[in-house]
Amino acid sequence: KQEVTQIPAALSVPEGENLVLNCSFTDSAIYNLQWFRQDPGKGLTSLLLIQSSQREQTSGRLNASLDKSSGRSTLYIAASQPGDSATYLCAVPNNAGNMLTFGGGTRLMVKP
Amino acid sequence: DAGITQSPRHKVTETGTPVTLRCHQTENHRYMYWYRQDPGHGLRLIHYSYGVKDTDKGEVSDGYSVSRSKTEDFLLTLESATSSQTSVYFCAITERQELSGEQYFGPGTRLTVT
Image 1 (tube, chains in turn red, cyan):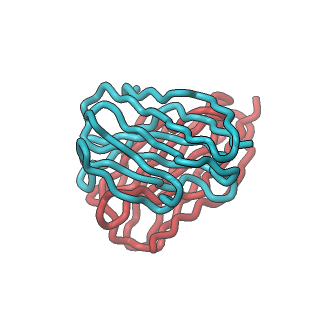
Image 2 (cartoon, each protein chain N blue to C red; image 1 turned 45 degrees about the vertical axis):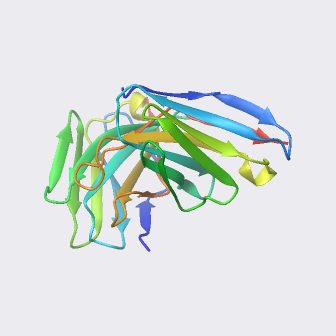
């Protein structure tokens, strides 16, 4: 059974710092990996989707990398801003592609 | 943002009553999903649909049923609500599984069973 872990569970940084969020998964036979953002009391917003054939994907100040062989993905946030404060979740589909398994999330606080 | 709405957004109900949550999409996507989110358990799949009238169970399907009579609507029913079903429920959609698989989520329904 696929297990997804995110470390750290919480992170507090001053504004302007570059930071890395980690996601690890136990079964490397994945089709893709998706990063989401969730604000308190809100739904999930898709940030980046990396296909299994890709090594990384970029959107603005966000860069996500994928290393299937080691079962890891990282989300890099450049020049963090208070508006980046949220919980960040990673998720991978199962072999049938009909279910996402989510990590527990990293709760990020960027202090002004 | 993907065109997904959920109704109601908040509901308080009593143990033993039936409850139906609705997910509506305007994207004409084939696949729709119901998840629940709980502290300490994260997001878990309840049921999903791969087409009109085609549904299947997810990880935590006991006590829930679903129906999909139109592409745009996916209903989640709690036949007899229990306190353990107090949760935040999210609907999600995707155009394709496997090869693409990017899922888009609705705003959620907060359900409290007293």
